[in-house]
Length: 108
Image 1 (cartoon, one colour):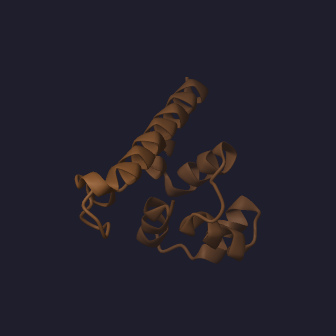
Image 2: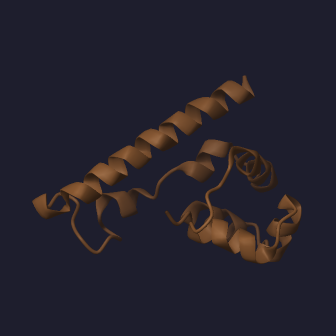
């Protein structure tokens, strides 16, 4: 899943992908893949990015509410034909909640 929050945070701070990639010790192309969802963001990099962007890690994991509500999605998620998409979103939310709990445990 594309992570719009990473791109937004990076752009808010006027950081280039190259700069952020250097902070993570990865190539710019790999960082671009993290932003577009081709590469999953691991916990270690999540924590480094949170420090770089000066936000709590869960902020970077939060789903785009408009996306989940269907306002930016090409189909309305309340439509019966979209049941598989709803279940996929529900599963992803559960995964993110679990990651958030793990991060809370790390920070305590």
